[in-house]
Length: 311
Image (cartoon, rainbow, N blue to C red; front, side, top):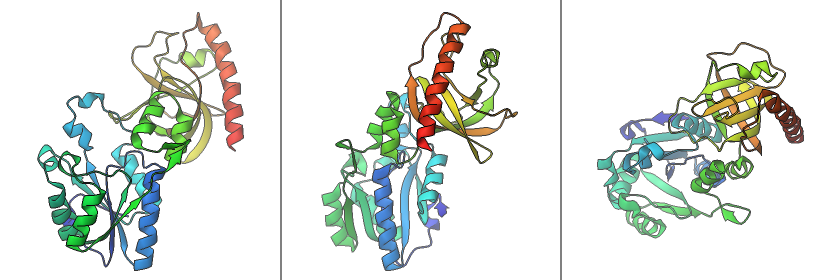
């Protein structure tokens, strides 16, 4: 996979199969677009070219950017795109000035003149350009004008609901990671560096790795206890995660932590990835640490049962 931060660096292709979007989460709908692109590129001996933007347009255009949260960071998006097998990724810097570009000007100046698009693949209800004025019908008309074909990929459905990044974000904010994972086609995760906590978990037999999430725009799922998997130094472990403010011990601020089963190594300063499988319960306040320990013992049993069913 080749990544270009300047569209002028793109060397061109015999047959460029292109898609454009923000692709937050790279869910099963996005994956269907990529699969179709790869099939066409293989047939035509061409290349897949994905055009995306950084920062996310909503960060630039939203009046309250501090309230914005996204499923995947730019780094994670790039990892997933490489995993799904995109040949070329062009990242266009998104600014307020760029946001005023009319849709046909964007198509002509970027897709036609710079990339020389031969086939454009878009998802259902795709909009782009100034005020999101561009749509599939306009793309078809513009494609005929400039000599490229356009294909629209139908929506993917889970439980009779069309999959979208917005619906996945809503599911995560409700703590429904099981539904979010089905829509994503893989497990929602949070990555971060392990930092020192107050070590209260050790006192009751449930030591946790607390992580510091570097991406300030990362969407953190709803508070509660979760069945998790944890990747450390390339190895996968099972664990019991917690997101919340730990009301029993009176901690200020949101904490993301995980009790890693059958693990006793020093990992302060290391980056780990927590994969969330299912939610066990809401965060609760207990009368004392003994009551918390009793509940965590029950949670561990429930977590191991869920994870054993995933094997």
